[in-house]
Length: 140
Image 1 (cartoon, helix red, strand yellow):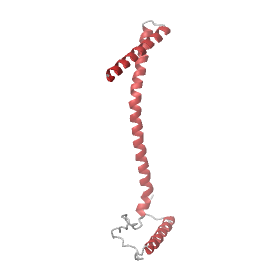
Image 2: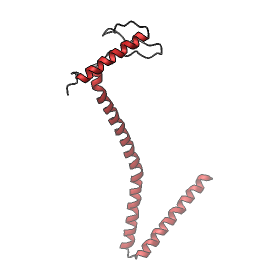
Image 3: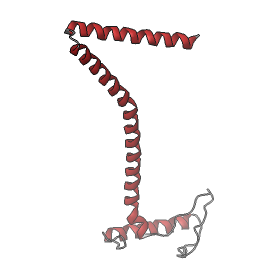
């Protein structure tokens, strides 16, 4: 894509913008001649810069810049979501591996399915006791 060629549609849009700018300048009482190419942008009474000269390059790159901003924003959001997923999923995965290895160890030691469930329930009860002990120590 040659970014420096002006399509007929872009040419018509540029002419329309120039006409609007001239009309606005006439309405504001400013001289009707267009600003020089190398002139610095004028400052309007509101403190904003007046519209600058038309630039084919600026129009051509506007879509690319918008796409790049969206891509950067999506990349940052994706990175944050991956980080959050790792913070949550790694401890959950480790807990699941621990419970599975605990159950398999019970099975290898000859426990029946009911005994495995009793051992897991006892493990949960001990974990609950540890949590209540930690809460009691924090509150006091």
